[in-house]
Amino acid sequence: MKIVRRYVLISAGAGLITLPIIDVSALAAVHVALIKELTEHYGHEFSEHAARNIVIAIGASLVPGSIGSILGRKLLRALPFIDPVTALATMSGFSAFVSYSLGRIFIEHFERGGTLENFDVEHLHDVLVKA
Image 1 (tube, one colour):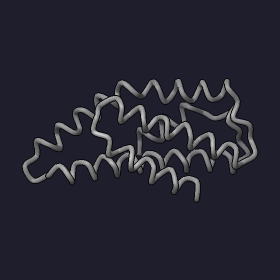
Image 2 (cartoon, rainbow, N blue to C red; image 1 turned 120 degrees about the vertical axis):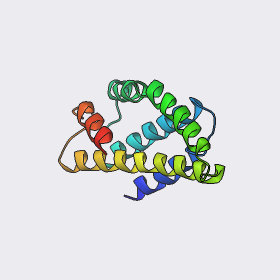
Image 3 (tube, rainbow, N blue to C red; image 1 turned 90 degrees about the vertical axis):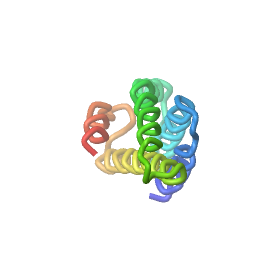
């Protein structure tokens, strides 16, 4: 969990980036680094093939994530009782939450004896969408 906590803080910082697409890209890079470090911590090899699959899965969320980021920021700015600092804190908190969830999912997978090669990306999508 030390690894996850460190990346949660990094993700919270990435959530403070206010440029659409760049914010989501930074968060995707943080997630890949989190997965790589957890994989190595559990003694598994972070293979190029598995890395590509994860990057593609994360990359597939860039467009909807960017649209959500833009719409979310506009919505937060449109609410009269939400100031810009609160809006930034909300985006930062959401980024941290996603990283925490991702870390927990991978820890549980590795604790059950799973590897990066047999990680179920569909399960990740289902968990994150339902969270």
